[in-house]
Each structure stands twice: as structure tokens, then as C-alpha cells.
Length: 459
Image (cartoon, rainbow, N blue to C red; front, top):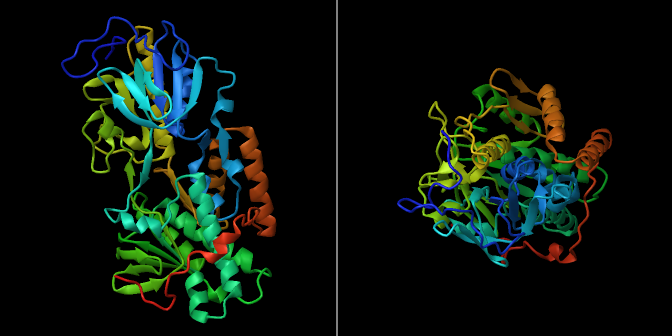
């Protein structure tokens, strides 16, 4: 179904006769303005595609870089450095004259006035708006746990987790108390999705690496890695055979997997799982996510995870000029399935939405409804072990790991990142070394000790 460039601003309101002229950011002119909120996979794909159109594009993000989140856990476990998986957003568009990058935080949207409100820039008007704000972790109403269980969504998060992991080994080496050593070297991860199992496998590899000839007073027997999943299976989105393969691979790496039990409490001493109290200095939250508050800004209908419910062309109902893509969108396909929050979904939606907008600008018929091409789900579990579900083909072990490695190298956004990651992986493969084991904050060694180290967890 085709759309004129401006049909309506909201239900019952008439459309303006000409593009918005109040343009506090970018150059004024008659070109339609497309504002994209979020420089993740979806926002970046949309901006790149729109860079080839006759539109003024403004890409807004709180950071100045695009982050390749699928490899963020490797920064957290000292396998890669931040620069290996992050690229400056401005550099990506240095030769795309119609795309401007704004480092700012969006705080609201006035759909009636077609204006985005940003913390520093103020009002930024738009003709078309793409919401690609992504998701954040949800503690299911137990927000107090966040203080003691870091999440993994940004470079700062990864560096914080890395400091905690490396400091735990350093503090354990200096401790004379066997119980404290056990607590320091107990690493608990909550959530049996891809992030949880990849982190668990990577921590197991890290433990073997750092303890192999590096420390004199602690050894592998002191390390305990626990993965807690409230459901009955790991990787619930994958076929059962791959779930079982992931479970076996984790246990082969020495990871204790607890299934069918929910976390009851988390504090500075550790966590409670069912009736069991587990002292731990490092609890990492890898469980459920929820969309960032774009739905609240618009007053739009949202799904249970706060994602905006969108139509077949990824538009927000009653707002044909506003699109939502990626984790912030709840899209139901023709078979009644809600698309998962994966990078390929966001990228494909970003490119699709750009085509829709380009067609409207030119007055042409818009593409038919969005259709997701499922290229599979993958998760790596330590050295040379992974699972991959392509629907028509399921792999586990070394073949899946090889496929995972090749796919992730190709998905990195620039050649420099691909080269750096490849060299680091090659070096780690032959030496089992970790290239980023530097602690830059000495005060880390004095943190993460509960007021009473012998105290039991307060439940």
C-alpha cells in the first residue's frame, strides 16, 4: 500500500502541507528529514540505506560508536579489547553527506508536532521517525538486585564485569581464608539464553587461562561456575537437540547448570536459588530484557516486554510516519510468531524501512509487508564448541564453532575490526592466552567484599 509523504500526525489530525521547516539541527531545506533514534544494528542499517536517497538523515545516539554486541562478552572475559568491537559512528558516514550524527539522549517525542526532544539539542523536528532504541535488561521487578548483579549491554558494562572477574582472582591469591577464596572464585550467571551460556563458557576458559602458571596459591579446583535458568531448557528458542548439546558442552567445561529453579534473591554476599544459598562475589545478570521506553513516549500500545506493537510495514498504528524496528518493536509475522530480538531482525527491518521511506519520498508504491529471512541462531560455548540452528540444518561442536566464527567476522562493520578480532582469535587459539587482562583501577581490589564475609545471604 502506498503512502503520501505526510498523511497525518496522529489519529484525527490533518497533515501539514509541506515538510517541517523548524529544523534546529542540520541545514534547512526542502529535503524530507528522517530522524533515527539509536545507532545499533537496525538504526545503522537504516541510515546506511537512506544515505543513498534524497533525504536529510539525522542519526541520534547516546554514545559516539556502534557496538557489535554479539562479541561484547569477549570484552567482559578479557579475550578482546573494546576497540575490537566498536567503531566510531561518525567515521562510518564521513563520506555520506546527507547523514548527520548527533551524540545526545532522547527524552521524549511530540508526535503531534513531529518533534523529538533531546537532552542537549532540544527539539529536533522530523518528517519521518525511526525508533531503533533497543532493549535493556529487566530484573522482573527486583530492581535492587541490579546493584549486585551487573548486566552486559555496553562497553562500560563489559569493562566493569572484566574488572570484577580479574580482581576476584587477584584477591583470592592474597586471601588466607578458604571460605573467602571459595566465594571470590564462585561465578554465578543468571539466564540460560545465548548471553548466559557464552559468558559461562568464556569464564571457564578464562579460569583455565589465568590459573595456568599465573597464580601460585589458587588452582582450578577453587573455581566454581554456576549457570541458573528458571526454565527447563537452555536456549529455549533452539531445537531440543541443540539445547542438550549446549548443556553437555557447558558441563564438559566444568560449569554447573541449574535448570527449573528461579533466583529468589541477590545481594552483596551472593544469591539464593530455590532453597540453596550460594555465596558469590561475581553474580552476572543475563536474563530477560525489555524494550526502552519509546512506547511510553508515544503512548502507543506495547507488548509485555514494553516493545511497541507495529504493523506489517513496521509503522506504529495511527502514526504512519513513525517506524519501530529491532528490540523496541513487537512484530508478528504472517504465521503469528513474534520475531526474536536478534541483530539480523533489526538489520533487515532497518533496510526494509529505508526502502519504504525512499518509496514514499519518490511517490512510488511502498514495498509489501516486511518478511524476515531467518539465517539461524548461534551460540558459542568455549573453545571450539558451539551450537547453530539454521532451521534446515543444525550443527554442534567444532563445525558450529567454525560457522559461528566466520559469520561473526563477516558481520563486523569494518575491515579493521575483522582483522583485529581474527588476529586475537588466532593468537588465543594457539597460545590459549587472553590479550586484555589488564586491571586499570587498583581500588577494584578493595571492593565486592560484603560487610560480613561469613554471613549468610539475607533472603
